[in-house]
Length: 282
Image 1 (cartoon, rainbow, N blue to C red):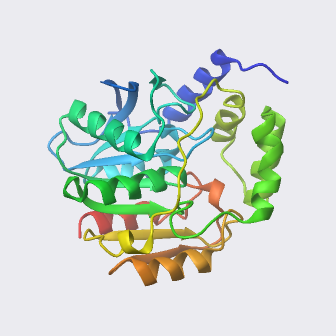
Image 2: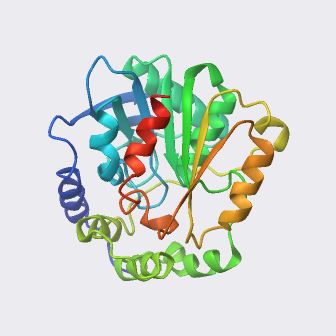
């Protein structure tokens, strides 16, 4: 097994962060579960937007393709998840969905934010949805970018292809998996390098749990935008959009053409940032 190289990871992280807007700054927030690293940009007096990345090797850096567009109308707070690859440092005790909610409450309190727009990709979408169901008064609008285990389960073939990478992560296996899932899409080499160097990152066990139940989803009373990757191999896009439409009142759905789950958010169609801006400003 290839040993994790923190120097290579940090260098790759910085290279992707160089694609963010020039006013970007980094802050750290202390929580009962550890220190959370947050990349921040946008006008200080603009409404806040909390962004959550996917799990595994994903980090807040992955939002670089949308950061500038979103920062025109929002104060963007992009978080590195506790216990996952990135610059947050887990202090222990993060074990349940309720703990995730308490962690996000502590992050928002540390940032001085009482109510925010919230967006999440993949596993980050699952966290964002649970947070909204738990504390709807703290969420103004919610967008979910090809979220996993929110409205449909994983495809068996996806899990089979991911298993070798999960059991014995190496840069080579990470690249092979991403090339399979993205169907040969041209991926930003700097972003791909960051995913590869995250292999073997000393992360904690991710918090998992069931999909939100239909009864809970029907109580959602905040505007929701669901963006689904048309070519996702993670889950069935039609099943995701159909179930969301049945259970979430007034959900807006956008199917992103010619993109897969793991190509997001960096390789999202160019108009994605503008569409998010329209939704958030609606």
